[in-house]
Image 1 (cartoon, one colour):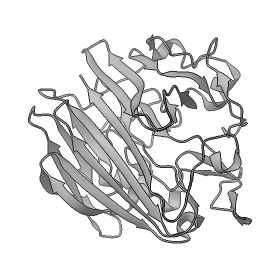
Image 2 (cartoon, helix red, strand yellow; image 1 turned 90 degrees about the vertical axis):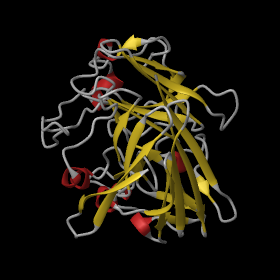
Image 3 (cartoon, helix red, strand yellow; image 1 turned 180 degrees about the horizontal axis):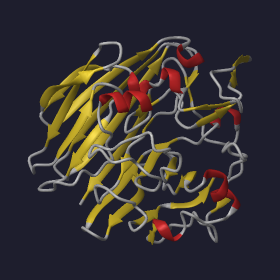
Image 4 (cartoon, helix red, strand yellow; image 1 turned 180 degrees about the vertical axis):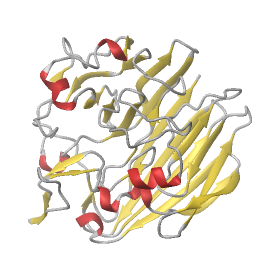
Length: 340
């Protein structure tokens, strides 16, 4: 592993890049700020499989780009109630908390490096009691490993000293062509159902079939064929920003969730996860303020995020899979990015 100085945050804190390499020559670069993935290069490839930002200042300003997300990935409305106490959290004007709250984003915090070798690095963060409004001291470790099968594997663990909701993900933006729109790339999802939302993108609590909707990617289909559908769910999000319910042979099984292919260069990604859901997001809300590593303004549809996680607003939806971690228990999750 090569460790190098990446830059200094606005508060002067030093940020370091950790470039992992496997025996086949695949590399991945991870920052100790937020576990941010700035680059993934399969063996012999010059194209970056992720859409990176221009510099450290851009990652810090975003707070959510290619980084680890917690304590609760995705959306919560009106906080949550746990063991008779209500936790209001930091909310926007619509009562929604997204990704734990922008001002306290885990993606701009410096994580401790607790272990490192040529093909792996382990990061640790202590999220103190009251952090982002959540109860309990939560200790999170995430290990990034490049395998001999040209996979970037993320193994998550978390423990707490008080009951608290936990929903972790890595918000990586993929573009297998390296740049330009992803509308010509092929997507396949291992999902027969999704969780419909209201106009604030909060799930209703229903589990609905994807059949006959723009979210039906059970067969490989070009992203551009449906991303601009006028269906109500698509119009609410201005594209894809939806949680799909992954097909599982058993809860927690490590199984494929998505396959992405770029016909223009033949690059492929198979994403596997132990998580029950995945947020599919087509970079709808970029506003011209973000610039990629080549210095070009990032436009909508120039990347696809595949955020493996539990369902949005689960603490407020009794029928959704449980997200409460309790003392004595350990949260564990694995996501694998397999490149070909």
